[in-house]
Image (cartoon, rainbow, N blue to C red):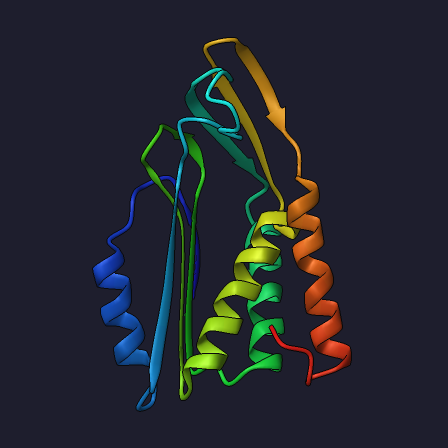
Length: 163
C-alpha cells in the first residue's frame, strides 16, 4: 500500500494492518521518520528549522513509490508492505514517513525496509523547501544518501555481499 497524504498517520494502526495483510509473518520491520529541528546538526550553530514544505506531482509520485516497492518485492521475500509519505507543511517532531515490511524472515524485512527508505531519500520525486531562522532554501539530495544507493547495486549484482 502506497499513500501520499497531508494528514498524520497512526504507526500502531499501520503495524496492525501489516500483521493482518501478511501470511504468517516471521518478522515485521517498521521505520517512522520525523522532521528534525536542525537539517544537519553538526555544530549546533546552524539555524533552527521552523517549517518544512514538501511538494510533489500527484500520480507521478505514487507511481515512483510503487516502483520502489516493486523493486524491494523482487529482491526479498516481502509478504506485505506499507509506505506513507506526507506532503505539505510540517514542523519539527512531525511524522513525515512510514515504511513497514512484513516477511517470513527478519533479514528480508530489515533489508527491504532499508532499501525502500534509501530509495525514498534519493529517488522519490519530492521537493523539500525549509524555512529556517536564517531564511528559506531548497533541500538537495546529500552525498551520503546517494552513496547508500550504491551498495544496493552491489547487492543486486552479488547476493553474497552483506546488506
